[in-house]
Length: 114
Length: 111
Image (cartoon, rainbow over all chains, first blue to last red; front, side, top):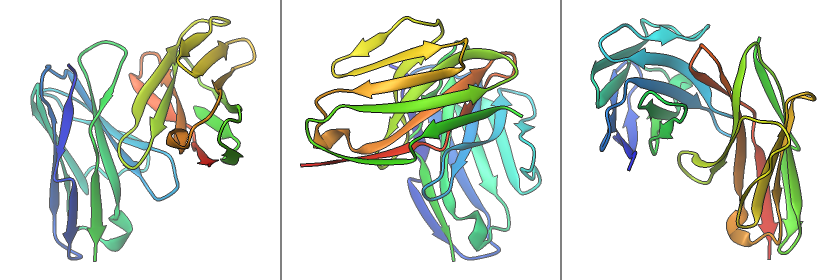
């Protein structure tokens, strides 16, 4: 149990376009979902925490108008990178919690902005 | 500011060697410390530690936490090439419901 999927697994887009990444908890209800970003050879940096039905809480330095997070249901959260630029190219990973201590990670989405 | 620091950042050893990875932390409100193994994709969970001095063990891997000195170690004995990965240490902050990750240790096991 506790499987989290992400879609797409990789995406290439042109500068200035928007990209949506989905995170789904497949076999449990996720009260909280987390979005992380990982640049090459660096660690995971938390971008935002979202609870179902409420606005996401963004970490310091993360632009909420650029990284739109929606957590409309207990099994789905989406991250939209708006007006993407090459510096947004990164590995985006979501995780989901069912209310306890543990976070279950998705497989990640590699975004490349040309 | 909450901080997790891992050392070494990179380690190359031969198959069969034993390695010790270090993780020290400074957080405002500690809840637990977690170790993950990351290969090409998302991290996979290894251990969660909440109490000092109690060793957690899984096969050739073991880990222990010292809450007084604010650090943890991850030991891998009789290493195999399949142990090559980045090992991440993260601390869960109580109340904030978030994980703060260290930079990771890139472990390479040569045959």
